Structures are given as structure tokens and as C-alpha cells.
Image (cartoon, rainbow, N blue to C red; front, side, top):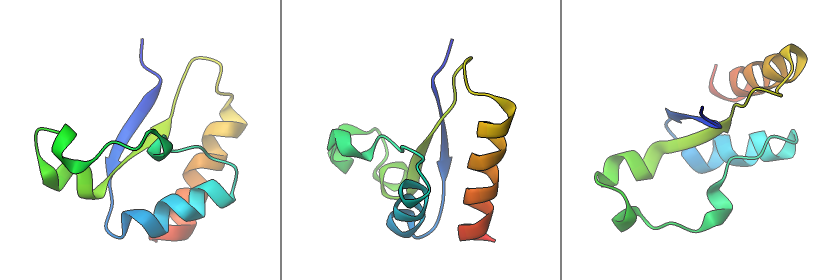
Length: 72
């Protein structure tokens, strides 16, 4: 079972801040540096979105809509 879905986006911090402002946690608070990942490129533009069995369809749509607002 999984609990997050990792995407790569340009301007990661802008997208992260937008999602957090919409109440969507993105796990960046863990403080991992780019050296903790096999590829620095993935660390620089990767963003972990929440996904878990209890996430309702409405909550899923909220994540999708919020992401689309920022990257579309």
C-alpha cells in the first residue's frame, strides 16, 4: 500500500506553497536535502502528493484542482 504520489514539476516551491495554502500537505517539512536522493534532479523538482485509501473522491478532486490551478 502507498501513501503518497510523487510528481515532478517546474518551480517546485511555488507549487508546494500553493498546495499547502489549499490545505494539501506535501511532506517537504521532513527536511531531506538533495543529497539524500539518488538523483539530484528528482529532488529539485519532485513533490510528494498525499494519496491513501481513506482519501475521498472529493479530496482527490481537491488535490487535482489545486494542482491544476498552479501548473496549468
